[in-house]
Length: 181
Image (cartoon, rainbow, N blue to C red; front, side, top):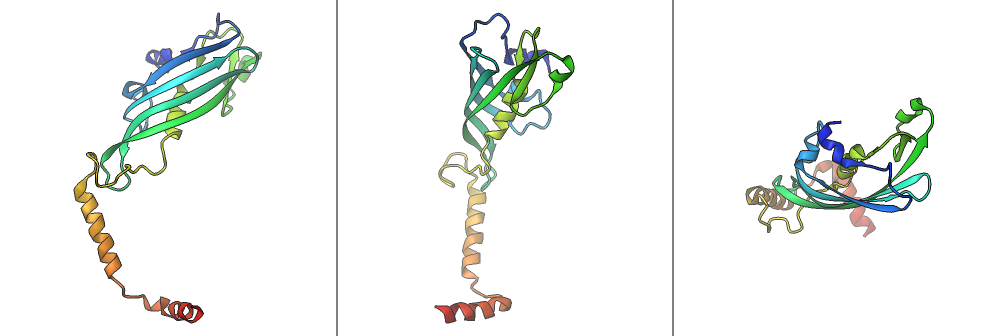
């Protein structure tokens, strides 16, 4: 990871055995350090709660913010609000070879590590927070909508509704449906 991403590490060495709060801002600069990121423009706040009272340590991550993504309906760039919460566990390992184990939500650290790097987790969780369907709240009526595309889609829908010609392969099923009703 780049030295520019060092701010996304939790300096656990020297912290008291209590709950600690951290806040990070994820923006375009953060996501520019990763290849193939689908987040280009955003404003995401990451609230981190680090519970060091007992092992394994617990890191709760809350992501809140806005990303800008292409609308699935009109392809215009729209703001998409994200909110999600995740939990990460931190365990000590005594064998240096075990440190590179990649568990989904467990970070393995050596006793002499000074920081807990959560950079990759923040990146992954931000991407997992993006909704599958990205459509604005009021399609066709927001400042972001591409009205030309919306108009074309509406015309196509009207044309399909007006086309009442039934495929002859389905005629037999229509007769059966009428008979049952």
